[in-house]
Length: 212
Length: 232
Image (cartoon, rainbow over all chains, first blue to last red; front, side):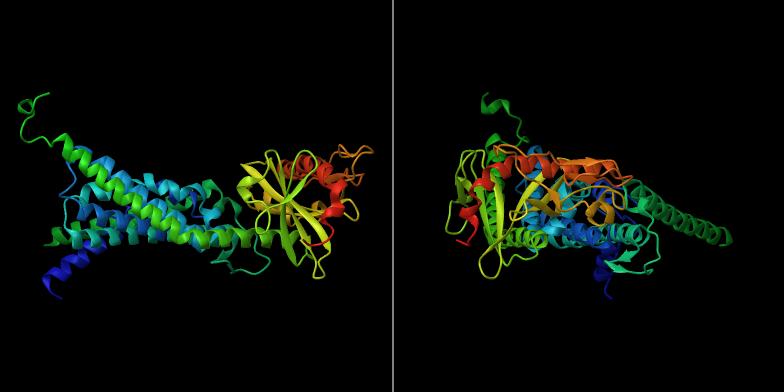
């Protein structure tokens, strides 16, 4: 790999791992807790957010020299709201059942702080290609995070995965997992795992420097 | 304000308005094309969703016609070959008539709404004009607690309450008996729904949704049921 492709890959991985919007930055919790009752819902929400985040960041990046800084927030919100409306219609066209399941949280993508945060912190200062890579990385990180929540909640709370029964008819579903408190339990557990990994890495690094 | 008073590094008002205007126009274009592009698919999805729900509550139906019953007397057909959906008379109640393969009326379906445990419970119930009974119901949308409120779809005791008596009073203006949800195990009459223990609020919502809708709809359509007997 050349140097540029390494940095690009690094930039992409940043959203998935080091700067994961859900597990590291702990942003976008409203959809993360509300719609992740099943793997399908979580994945759809992740893909909808991916579409909005990527399209808005690309447009913001393309127009960045045109947008005066005094009106930048208003501009970003208009751009984000546009793509949220587009994704709203697209989901209705694909499946009404999915649209009902995601409910108001589709429209609420417009206030997802990850998207405005990316537009302001990254897309407004970078050319198209780095913006696209960063946006895709962040979206992938968010989607993976939602999927991690959704699959655990569906498996424990309904005994199914993508609607396929896993444990046979005798399984008594752990209903609390698909209720709002379950969202907090599962998110807490994932944060704990991530924190433990980060801590272990730190300790190893400290030991390595001490030995050196 | 004169132009000399504006420091050189400030963006001019014209530039700001131009940018906002340009972006608003661009975004407007994107939204309108998305709306136009998905309109047919969305309408088709909505129609399929309604049909699927009606076929579920009237299993013998093979085709569906949408009607609206106006407060005084008239029943108008809505949609293809009838009144446009936005021209339905004010105060009219929408309902669906299901017809079997030979074009005979096999049942009437209508929507009812009542407040459940969390948010509204929207149901579609079926009325059988031959027996003057509510033969069953299906859920259109609800956000009831999984594993508790959603038992209304599977609980055997609850579903055994159907068919429910929904006959009209002698003058045809009201239901002879209001449909009510009663405590689990105390159902004694054909117009009562046996509540589910632990899901009383959702059970009551179903009863109220059916009752509120039926007492508005049935007095309007029962006297004119002969108009609906054959598929138009």
